[in-house]
Length: 161
Image 1 (cartoon, one colour):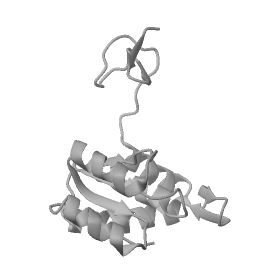
Image 2 (image 1 turned 135 degrees about the vertical axis):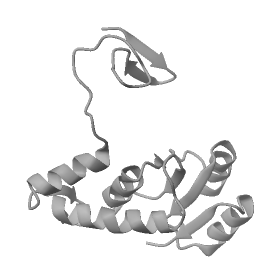
Image 3 (image 1 turned 90 degrees about the horizontal axis):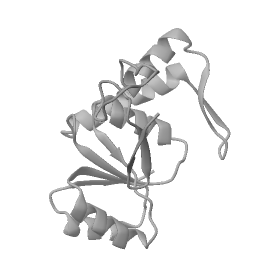
Image 4 (image 1 turned 180 degrees about the vertical axis):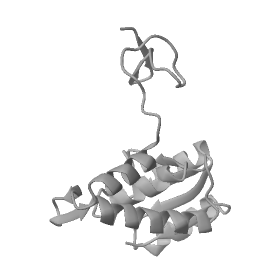
């Protein structure tokens, strides 16, 4: 099997119906991640979908699906549409899966960059590179939130936990 290398990411060149074309022996799924969650919630609603070890929280497929629907509706109400970039700067806490699935289920792009510098410096550089519609941070420091509003006045900045 040939591999196409793009920066640090290796992609199979044989995926059909994707951006990379060629021969591949395994079929692509014909549905998105949001649809996969809906299917799992319908098929096995009481099975555990996510376990957050740090808080010992167990979330079933049914609970996760419901939480995702609620958050997705909120994102749509904020004007997020398919293809919009949502920049996420927070930990992998008890709401990470809900946030991820809500964003991708409406067709938005989930972008969670690796922060190797202080948060305000990295976010400024990333904001200047991508056209993010919303920035979601888990930061109670209002000075960072206010600084981000001056860096990108047209972007919706939401903060809280």
